[in-house]
Image (cartoon, rainbow, N blue to C red; front, top):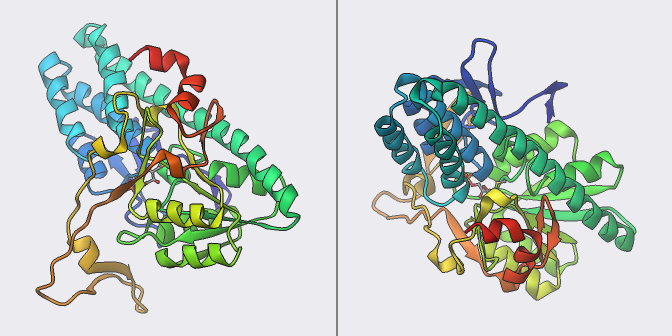
Length: 363
Ligand code: MRU
């Protein structure tokens, strides 16, 4: 999407041939980029969340394999590189999906051809992600159009974390329908959960919606239920880091509570995701590995001070411990539907099988 008139993807190949990505640790205060020159750079960028969001983690890992091949294209080195990248973040299945895809094509060619093949495959993964997100937008747009028509007024949509273009290569998953609705002239307003502890909503979702001119309001994570009780939320759309074959949706911690509140208040709750986010090997969400991050992300908060400096300050008394589990699982029964690049289906095994008979059969 565009920022100040310039079109960006989150990751691309610069004219110099380097892999370049938006440095999301600097947003919303500065739109800076980072060059990834080595496998270690790519792994570090994923681990420290300079790049984040399930589809973008996958795309970066694919380029990480290409960078690894550039330094040493042997089988042993590539196997080690895949292990290094796989160990960066455990929850988003897109990481393993992209690594498997690149390793499969590399296994079929001689070492001397592997650099070119890996870069081509990483670029193909990026292009496919853009197209899948665009299609999610097309299908989600029809959902929003229908609800807006029934409501007969501006539609209030709540989202959690950042599942916009910054989480993908372009467009986003949960936000692609929002951008398309806004561009189609359908009046939408977005409630943006701040998304503690790392505040991806307040920092990233608010940044990208603002850059595109979409009306939005940042809210504390706990306000959503109250707004739903007062009829001020018409629709919830979230992303997903891993959706099981049984359609349980693992996403940023706090998503489950929004789904419970939505169910209690009769608000439709959708998850938007491409096929690369589906883990066909798992039936139940309870088996999804949940990332545990540093307690410092809970005990401290980072922002820009009035002097203009980026500063991190402590919120919690010295001596109190904190637990930082980064994701939770929303059971399929609380999910109204899944918005995918192939259309919208019920959040059920049967719904996914109907849309993806080929992928399911391949497992
Ligand atoms: O920890 P993050 O910022 O990588 O978590 C991101 C999310 O939870 C997104 O909702 C998810 O990746 C879907 S992205 C389109």
